[in-house]
Amino acid sequence: MRTYLLTALTTVALLNAAGTPPAAQAAGRCGQHPWCDMTLTPQARAALLLAAMTTDEKVALLGGDEFTGAAGGAHSHTGTQHGIPRLDVPTVLYSDGPVGPRQGRSTGLPVPLALAATFDPALAAAHGAVAAGEARDKGNDVIFGPAVNIARTPLSGRTFENYGEDPFLQTRMVVAWIKAAQAAGVIADVKHFAANNQEGVDISGGQSAQGVGVEGSRLIQNSVVDERTLREIYLPHFEAAVKEAKVGSVMCSYNRINGQYGCENQHLLRTILRKEWGFDGYVLADY
Image 1 (cartoon, one colour):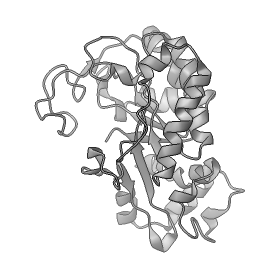
Image 2: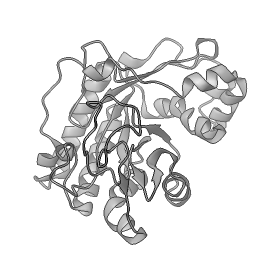
Image 3: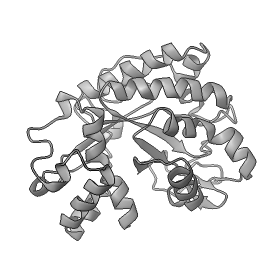
Image 4: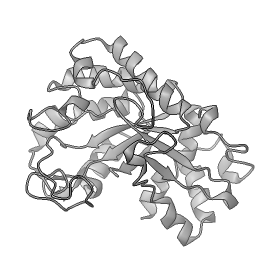
């Protein structure tokens, strides 16, 4: 839990580094505390903040779902990570998604699958800038995008949100998208890590907790992938997002990968993401 908290607490530092938008800033975004010292690394600042927090505050910081926010109301947010006023930890606001904010009236952007068909990273950058700019103007700090899962089956209900079946094409498009989005003043959250390539049937109608569904549902589905295939097909675009685009956040997926759920998958989150790729942002669970 300590490791997870340390990575989650880097949000504040990442927001400062990304240049948080005026719409999302409050007066005294951080204050005069030791962890507000921008000359320190995000990890050092997170450690100082963690030492000052109570157990209840640590637990509260791990949540953030807004069950009504997912409906896309004009003044709602997909997620709200409530701040800690006594420590000047700001509230962090999240918005879907890869096709633009799900938050009232927004620009109806082309779906990423159509965007990928242009083979044009410049258009991907324009797409990311518009989506992130609107998310920023609606008061958000983080946008849930881009979605970069490989199109493995045409029956997946979310294939349109991704960039097709070619790993190299995906890397070129999403790197451009992320760079432009983060330049607009929000943190991009690349998703869903990893091998989240089919939907199946969810008996709850899409409102269940993780692990409830029937075989094939993304909530319980197990993606069995050998290491070479994982590295060559399902991970290159995530690696490019981390190493080239310097993405601030990664969303782990509902599904299992070789038997272990994405958000507790030690091989993906520790060995590959942290140690091999050197990711120093934070991991966010899918809803």
